Length: 226
Image (cartoon, rainbow, N blue to C red; front, side):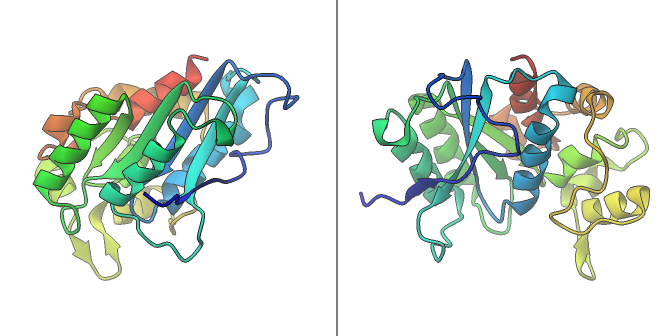
């Protein structure tokens, strides 16, 4: 298998004080699909790490393809980046946790493909943060709960015009939203509410293949507890 992986600069402005000091916890995260909004979200998390109570010895590395023209963003290709990073001394410290952040994306990811990805992650010890229908559901939960929504409408996430339903709801509630810019300040209270709201929906990866929900909350909880 030819190598595709490069590790881009760590998220945010905060890094481990010295390269000679091993981080207490190192998270490696790859984003399937376009991934720009997800990258922006975690960049803001680390940029506000001190405010959020995250240890200065926690480090997060985004995994990207070496070739900028490599547009293989389907989860079955992105998982190869995780496989290259696992136990590879050429990239520095061994990661404590390896994650892939994925949208259900029914238009591009078949059920059997997602089932295979879940199986590989379980076998290899990778963590999968899956959102159905999209990462925008996780963003929405920072702003409001889903009690007043038709859950099937959220799950369908129908596109009208240039935006899908979830994007339009975020736009309406925040008076504007253009990907990948997060239209609200990410603070402890918003994250706490989002986690609580997410746990009222589905968070099991196998169930998330068909059901509304997101378990990005688990990844964020892991980062915040360090």
